[in-house]
Length: 345
Ligand SMILES: Cc1cc2nc3c(=O)[nH]c(=O)nc-3n(C[C@H](O)[C@H](O)[C@H](O)COP(=O)(O)OP(=O)(O)OC[C@H]3O[C@@H](n4cnc5c(N)ncnc54)[C@H](O)[C@@H]3O)c2cc1C
Image (tube, rainbow, N blue to C red; front, side):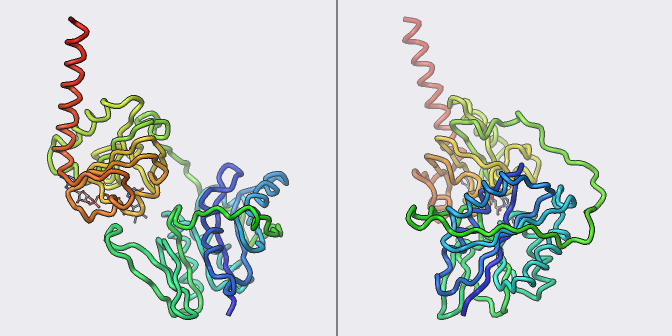
């Protein structure tokens, strides 16, 4: 039985977002006999330039194992994110193409779109999918529970499924000899309006609080650093040890306003790729990993030997992160002091 797969990608500043290529990676991982038509839809306020479309088609062609219908959904209402409007367009496209599997990136915006579309189509929603599996003819989806400590295999019984895919989970290069899938481009508009909703404006976080994206080293604090008042001070002092370093954070600390949102690393925060990522008291939830997976060397300090961050870490320290950082800072200070004394002589 073949399945038509509809991928709902994202564009940013007239370019294809990397998450759109993750969606193609997902379609590639469905076993070949099962793949029917693949449709990739990209909502944009437009007008989309011919060269932009050509560039995107080339990228898609190099990232897909199967032919793709690239549908540009162009409407001025898409200038600002609006889940119900995106949902209307996606639902219409799913019905038109008889798509049984509808895939979106796992982000706050697209989880809302997924809910809208699934309700309209009577489909099952599976969010935060990390792997595909099979039970006979049935496709199954693997997702994390309890911040990554447990894995759940979901086996939907409904004819249609709407799934959101964790960032990076399906990213995989297509071998060169298999590249060059046929891409057919078309433009569609399913909205009866070009006015989404009264837009009051956008406010971006002040930049400069943390130069996270440019940092060579990041010391990141998680909930495990909040048990004592000195926890965050120690993290700040540890940042001072490294050259071109910045302070990062998991989401709970920003939600609790202990650190500014600009420090948040993860799916709904910044994406970083420093040389060193020192994760202190961070469990390693998939949403956090999504923001720091590109780090070259990850050192994790956690009291729980089962914490999922250790699966990603190059070096793991099972210890109280407060004690570890206090020792690190002490040793650094001692070494600096020795250096000063040698210079004085
Ligand atoms: C749609 C969505 C988007 C999200 N986006 C993000 C995001 O962008 N970024 C993000 O970070 N999260 C995000 N989250 C939240 C995410 O799921 C986790 O809840 C969050 O990352 C957990 O943060 P944490 O690891 O600091 O806390 P916890 O999961 O509570 O982990 C704390 C860890 O500290 C350890 N610990 C406790 N005491 C100590 C100690 N003294 N020394 C050392 N270790 C200690 C514990 O063993 C534990 O592993 C998102 C969630 C959703 C649903």
